[in-house]
Length: 342
Image (cartoon, rainbow, N blue to C red; front, side, top):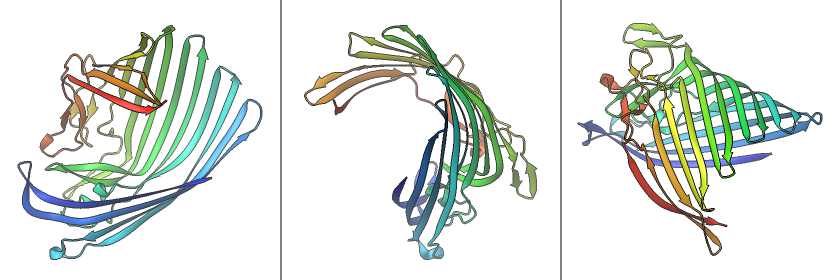
């Protein structure tokens, strides 16, 4: 049994963009506050020595309030409250100490952010009263196993979302959101690791999914476009990663990883394709664990994008004028240190 409480306050000023520079005209000036309260109950029931049942329920209530400080175009102050119940049910089977299998079903509730609520095509202040939270139902089956130096895990999932929050337009660096009817995401996730030596670990992960609109009609002026069956933009079908972790001279840890992503679509109509990562992107990091009195000092250094590849890290979905590419940085060197209790 538990509860959590969160609060947030933003003072927002939106100005008209003039070639990427804030202009003198103020479009929005307002104070936004959010208060979120969540209460939950979780219960684990050992059915037998090999079977366990876990269940739980949660109630979330979020209150959004806005005080409009720019009243020359009318006072848009107001508030919205969004609330929902969600729950989960999971059954776990442990046939032996090395194998765990499970199946689960869960519901979830996600409210829009204040930015998503504030960004309105008409440019008015206040909150968008037509943007609602999205609700999802997810099912999952998986298995985890270990044998000697090997570890492995595989999961298959399916998630259906109603009133999905989607970006439908981008203009002058500002993204606008609406609710789509329904989306569906199905896929698999696999991970494996093997100890090549007592101090060297090889890890691999693979994710493959298909995320589509199952009910979404886009209004383009007077034209109605049925996007049901189109893939969700910004979601690559396949992502893979392989890495090595090792310990040198007892306290020096080295991590090297290589990641790859397939192509993805950049718009809801599926007309713009963003290329994948080619041969992939490599990163390396080294850190040194050093006792420092009651504390632990960990200096670290690393290089991201070691081979200075040109690749698109993400996209601006439905970007205005086809401006959808968000390139990732080239080769980057970083150094730092962290301090923590021993």
